Length: 369
Image (cartoon, rainbow, N blue to C red):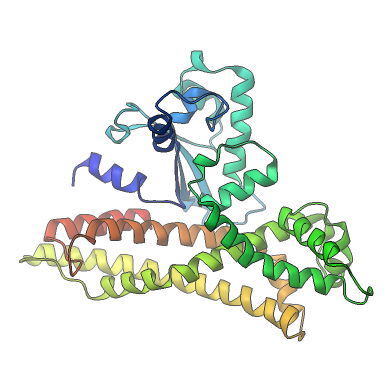
């Protein structure tokens, strides 16, 4: 596989890890049959709409990484192609936590084309993206809706039907929290519960929940962080459940798949090394994910459904931000690998690949994990 094809596969296959503004903006131009207006573009600085944002594990800080302190466990890279017509030829990149990021970004997108005021607004959007562990379309739309920043819906690539389905699923839990918080206060109108649920969803104006948080031993000044992170975990739980069959199919493939055709000893060993590495990493990431989501569901049910104990929910909520970032990192990698695997093998009835293609696919997966 050529370097260009390798880069194409990585940049076009990671819905939760890659925010391909260049691709989306180009599709918008084709659909509109004209140049989008500044209001229709994601960034006010036109040059920035030709970039690709990528989430990558922070290898240097991944051991014990704490989202409250730098470095974040997931870093955000801005990739600027040399050639917007063919972004897979290569380009320049910079991480948002680099000391000279703003200066480098202005240079990469063309300093003469960047208006100072517009650039500042665009940097705020980049900082918003930086404070997210995942670039999944649902999380993107939700975060910008919370911030009040106007963003063209085309950049989220999420149907209204999917948006509503996800929200409806997750709001069921918030309704139970709202009812729990208002118990003992007489006949509480449904409108009051709805108002409280909206506040929990938006993670702001949470004063009515302060007594509840105090009873759980949780600091009120972190209420917004707790509920935003907990909502994000709820989304990951929903999405992971929908992807269970794909995860199982891939897990079976990585255990048993053999290349198509004859592999000499060196090639067979390369395949087994790649398979062992990918299998071990996916197993570890899945194990951590299942444990965290299990604690998420169990602690909620114990308190809000069974009315047994608040201890586990309080402890989980206290560390919700750390759980949110770790889950994002794990699932970004898993979903990226799943998508690449599906694209590379879907044309084969038994999902087998020629020897060299299988070696290359396993190499790419190792890099992504």
